Amino acid sequence: MGNTVFTTLTRQSGLQREMQVLAHNVANLSTTGYRREGVIFTEYMRQLNGAEEPLSMAAANARHTYLTQGAFAQTGGALDLAIEGDGFFVIETPQGERLTRSGHFIANAQGEMVNADGFRLLDAAGAPVFIPPDARGITIGRDGTVSSDDQPLARIGLMRPEDSSMLRRAQGTMLQFEGELFPDDDSILHQGFLEESNVNPIIEMARMIEIQRAYEMGQKFLEREDERVRAVVQTLGK
Image 1: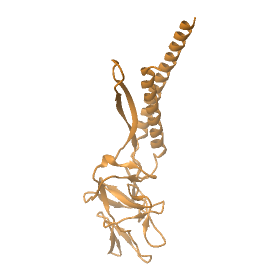
Image 2: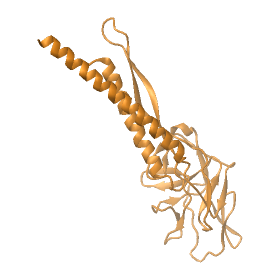
Image 3: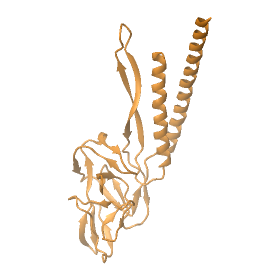
Image 4: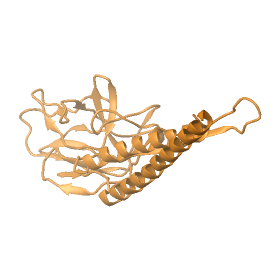
């Protein structure tokens, strides 16, 4: 198999991966706090034996998470929160702490604020946010202070990673991070709102069409190359 075929196959494989990522984005168009993903194509070069030119191929093994702000939707829920800024909620999971922009929370039987999966929301000190069962008139300030009848109960911690490029997709809308977390005092919370997905369906569909056309071109090239090889084999076999 020639180097041109290997190069085309790696390109086709990368386009398939990108199409899968785009389809996942579109499927989460209405998911609260979802962050759009993209595929990064990188060049892979290898020195061949002899006097041949180095072989260059495209690899699409890396993903990038886009952190642009999503639109806000008003819900009126006392424990629904939207972040304005670059901060993240910190969620405690069995696999470790995770970051998310999905701000739909409820109080569990123990009075702890948890997400839809039952994982606890952490405060600025890294402890679970607790709301007493008899608390009334819950308000959450722009700085994350949770109060009941104007009495402070806790302060939700908004954090940002040391390097946002190191964020990786984890379960659902949660992101796994590497490195340290730092308090984000510039971000503010909006009670009674949720941040929508930052996926733009028009951009995703346009890119899907581009990928489909590029994949079809690659497929036609492979078919022509296969026909050429068959013709050569038939000619030499006579």
